[in-house]
Length: 246
Image (tube, rainbow, N blue to C red; front, side, top):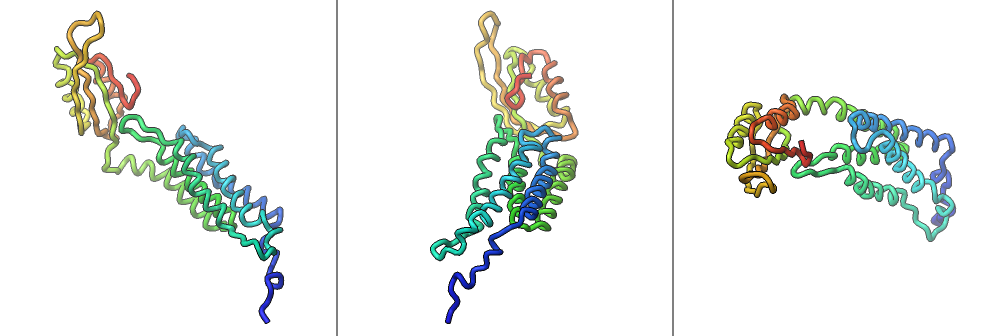
């Protein structure tokens, strides 16, 4: 005769000791903190505490999903799915990551921080499930990527950064040609340029040109130095870079 559900039911698989529970939560705190330190040192919107909380929360949800409903495991009308709550973390963390992404003109920032929050959630899930080796290796790879590959990317990446420039220039001057010449002098490529006319403010004479540029920056040049040089050109009234007036 076949065995009944009560006979094959092993309650131990749905139970966890206080010591094991504590170890998993503390490990989630440590691993999440290691990644959060790098983000905190870089002055990013999601730093040390945020990454710890995401990792702890993810681990806690897995623990709840696996062991929080043990008293219902023997009920033949109940089917436990330990992965159900954990699966919601992957989609839910997207809302938190979206809050770290900022777009100013064509410049998008915060993508790496959003990705680090997502992978920290994955680390929390693996720790909560007891997959210690996998979570440790994953954390090591993430830390290496954030600390060391960032420098490698800046030094060797062939893709140059893009930046928006908006300038107000006196229409009667030759400032536009001087601006273009100065950008070329710094090795900065102009990928797009739009010139618009604008009536001068009351009390001013003549008209102004609104020049909108999309430029590709060279990592070897400090962009602040370029802006200072452009602002010193005669006829340049104002400059905005990335949405900030300079």
